[in-house]
Length: 574
Image (cartoon, rainbow, N blue to C red):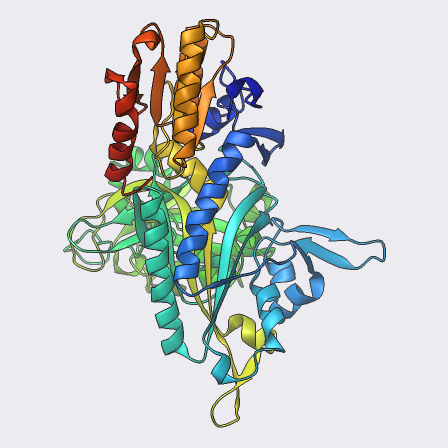
């Protein structure tokens, strides 16, 4: 491709709305453009990357025995009502009506649609197992689209669904897809971890997420270097040891604590530690007040709370000051479990029940209660684990110390079981002629998000550094002075030769200053670079790689050999 003919609107300045490197660089490098918040167009260079990622996904899915099809992004309300997700999925679902007032959604995912497709046509156990996938645009009305392609309203996704006779078949399908995902993300040259995930709105009991490691990732993960334990912060089990107190239960006492609304202020005033307090958090779950109590030195995990309550995350909100005063009788900051308004549901983290003589809010403005004890002074619904994992916690698998890191979720896999086949009445006949529900799995890869993840892991202060496997072009030929006949002739000769070998080549034949050309090639990140300059008449060019600063002058005849070496290093061939 000739850059003089190419639509490549690069930017010198960082767009004001772009917060992270991938967002900044994909805009600056002319790979995408924003239409509205969370909606992007892929320009020629960026779309070439998208197609290469899609092809890698397609190859590994096909190799794993999955069959590709393509379904509509528009789905009727009835399918989602049958599964119960029309209302439960939440405000992220784009909903619309046609001219006849029939309701539809723009698909955020396709479990219902796929299941409805096969339920009347796959009738016998002899047709199982079945594995289907598509690569398609999905839609989610994010409350706060941010980070470019990492959290957007419209995104490209590969979603696959497996249908088996039983749990044993599902586990085999799950393992098969796990291996396929490993191959995809390894081929994409991503540094990633596989972690236990929360099933959330998808349902099912088992889920894993494939996280591309990045300091700007929105997902936090806990992992153990001594064993293979890894989980998202939403899912991770917290092993918390209560501070031992070898003393009797002391008489509780109300203490005047004027304007001390935070744990930090309280412990400073009372000269105690945070672990000597219990923290009260008051929410509304579907409009009903919920009181949660956890150790004062920890944070509450709202995902775990939602799972216990059996609600979606959008149905949980912090209680307002009026609600807090109504159920406790005090202003916010002085809430406690003793003397709550009758009928208020109190959830207590199990670790609180093992604490002794701790401090809680007094349910009276400017007062706290010291020497509170569970069982004697109050009771509630004891919940095994309401806590959010943190650095230094104990690994629940081997007892070593956990570490925390951030990542971008680029893939997920779910064991759905019969959640959707039951609700949509999707059954097959077993070998005895008995109807049984399909046992399902669901598997997603964020294609557009994977492009952003690659850029996050492969860039420097000059621009993107594409791995060969996904780069929009393999080689860029920079002709320093297009007005010099010998330079253009040699550039064209190399261009034709490399293209004849099947390489994807850019030639910068623009009438621009050398500095502009060098800045653009650094920005767009083509991995192999050939510079045709003053020694063109000697058939000598400069050869370099985007990933390092080393430059060498070589004879034109050496170019193909050098490129082959580079391909071989990445496990590729020309």
